[in-house]
Every structure is written in C-alpha cells, then in structure tokens.
Image (cartoon, rainbow, N blue to C red):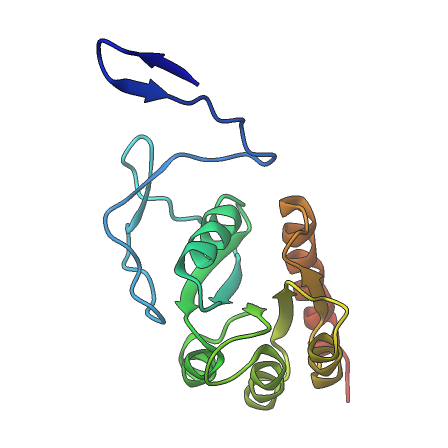
Amino acid sequence: MESDPAEGVASVTLPLPPFPVIPRRLDGLMDMCEEPDEGQFRGADGVADRRSEPTIRVVIVDDYPFFRFGLRELLNAEVDIEVVAECADGQEAVDLAGQMVPDVVVTDLKMPRLDGADTTRRLLQIDPDVAVVVITSAPHGRSAARATAAGAHAVLGKDVSPSILVATVRTAYANALRSAERPT
C-alpha cells in the first residue's frame, strides 16, 4: 500500500483475477427474475453486446446479489453463453422457468424459501430438458447428495475455478441436449 501523507490518500494495487475480465458498463442493475432489457449490457465501446449465434440461455439462482453479479459477469463474458435472468431464491426460479425456458440453471444449494435440491426437482418437473448445475460451499454434504438425487447435472463447490464452472455449464447443456434428442 502506498500513501501520500500530504494528500491523505492511500492506494492499493490488487492482483488481476485468474480469469479474463471484459469491461462492461451497466446502465442499471438487472431486476431480479426479469429478462434484461435489450442493450442493457454494453461493451467498452458503448455498442450493445448481443450475440448473433445461438447461445446457452442461463438463469442464475442465488440469494447473494454479489455472487449473482460475479456469475453473470463471468458467464456473459463467454460468446456462447447468455444470462437471461437472475433469481434470489428457488421459488422465484420455479415461477420464472416456464416463461424464460432456460437451457441451464446455475443455482445455489442453501437458499431461503426453496433450496437448491427442491428447486432442481421442481425445475425438472416443469422442463425435463433443462440442465441444472448446483454450486455450494458444501459439495460433499447431504444436501448436495439430495440435489444429485433430484437430477442435478453437476454439484460444484463455490471454490471451483471459473474455467471449470464455464466448462460445466457447457457440458451440462450438451448432455441435456443429447438426452432431449434421444427417442423415447
């Protein structure tokens, strides 16, 4: 930490994050469980960041706004992934699922109103083709086992690297897509 006594200001140099960060300017924070307005996310050049290729539509479910923000920024930085909604708990995600029809839901395990395991079960009842990735601080506990039993495609610890999370979202999507294409 450097400081200038005359100025009374201290400056801190922070290390770079272990994943690529794409600068974005937010015109406003996304309302919970609402689809982002067109052009809400803009690149450094001010041009709307909309992709022309098909994308993996993701809904993020976590009761911590800061964690949702980090996941949104990480996933939206990928050219083939788009966060289409965020929810503060599982019940909001279940209520929204029929409207948004996400490809992948990334959900926390421990949340108010409806936990990740019950959220997974209900989401798969609404849409058996949705892939659910559960993120938790206790990936080896009973609740994580319940989420797997409910049909989660993956259960990851919150200490997982960003690249593993992104790869897991893509893999869960691909596996769900293959399952949906199989004749019954």
